[in-house]
Length: 297
Image (tube, rainbow, N blue to C red; front, side, top):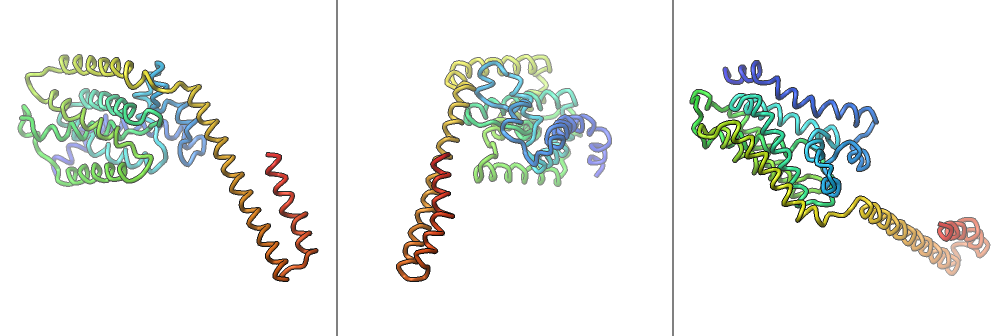
């Protein structure tokens, strides 16, 4: 209880600033434009992570996508997790390292997403939150200089474990949940947290080595993943072709429905359920205009 009170009083400010960095864009974009959820065009316009754009120099998307959210449920889920784990990471590591872990693992999560989902746009803070989870887990395996800090809230541990399992299960069970970003954030957060807690590694070394690693990874991806990423023009052409195919399929379905109705009308005449005059009226006033409209399209 004493630890929880200290976390709320002394270690909430910087976590709340990170939360504000996600809530403000949500208010300015989702709420201001009255969007129940982000559309693809809006997300890309405001900085969503998207491999083809990152491949052509828009590197900032590796970070900016972290502060956008698909809808209110997405935002609340990530921010409720952040307020729990962020205070602990601030408590164990300090606020400077909290920011460092958050942004570094956000980039790592985005890069992982680019590798496994090169044609899907991505938004949300979950990759960075999972990075904080990874750093939090690292505290179990490193001898902290101040042993008195090694006190954990069972409620926080339960919440974090439940959120990890629920998020991963959702990612494997439904479309739109980016498990690649989750796992990329967590996998980068564990070693980064371990390095920051190990007394023989100082802050400058970890910061410089992490920056070097990220630059190196991005350079490698330029010659592998990004090298074969489609250009925006190619994506637009594919989208136009997809819409054309969808339109043809819808027209074919409608034409099939009209033919079924026509056959039903013929059967009704044969069985004396409607008169030939009624059949003719139905044809000229209903079915024929619908067929002509499909041909015009």
